[in-house]
Length: 389
Image (cartoon, rainbow, N blue to C red; front, side, top):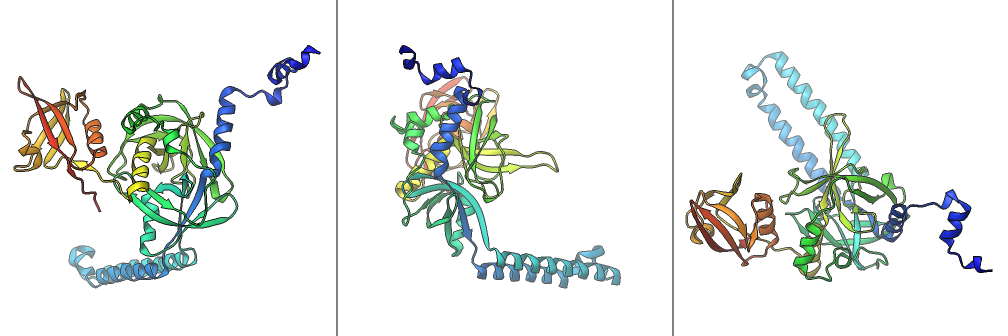
């Protein structure tokens, strides 16, 4: 009877059961999906109907003003009957389209995105979508089958595009523990540095979305590149992937097969009818913003005021210094080459800017400077960073 002590995997091997032959990677993906899919929610943000009506009226008024001054625009100012008729017809068509759009928005006055739970009462998502709730609309979250609860916008980081929602009327039994997922049992600085060391290009990744309001579904892809620039937010170190991004799923989480949080779906870029490329906000940026917002309601950031930096083949070039600015008072001069900071050798300007924006106001950053044939060490105190509106 000793054969009964064989493991289940031994029996599968002996019997050759193909239906149960999963690879290690398959099981990792399955386990990650089972663990985290209940933590992913659809988010619906209501746009107040009065805002829609006021915005419609504002746009119509702008085009009516344009119509009154058409002679300055059409045919170089010649008031021909044909030009007048053409322009009036354009205005009429525009007004009709705006009326149709207004009626459609009043019928379904909501915008959609996704988010995932990061605590029993918090979700993380994209700020540029949920901030529309500041117009006075309501935020509602939905699981696989029902609208679950109302959420409040706890805070948003315009610099990174991250927002945190708080839900008091429901408790999330499944959530992505950022401290555990990101290794924050280490000190914060070590964990962020470790997480900033990316998976290799072509690494396998997966996302959990709700395509067209279907229940949670996993999708797979690979990492195509790092540090991509898009112009969406001021921190632009996006991960390029070939993951599909379905409508209303911006804000969905992205994982490695083993369950490490890779980032959050941000946007998709198309050129004509060519296939799209998807961009992901890296996990260290998501965690940095979200944890600060959960604790303080905001993420205060430092900046070095009064200096423009550029990339030089020998290092980071100080292109311009504003007189009497904090940078100038600290001793920084135009033409200096920054070779590193805080004892770290660094020659890439984006890495330095990333470090500065992750600092807090009134922190001291020590720059290693090359000026001609001389080397200097200059300490500069960061100022509060003002984000663009």
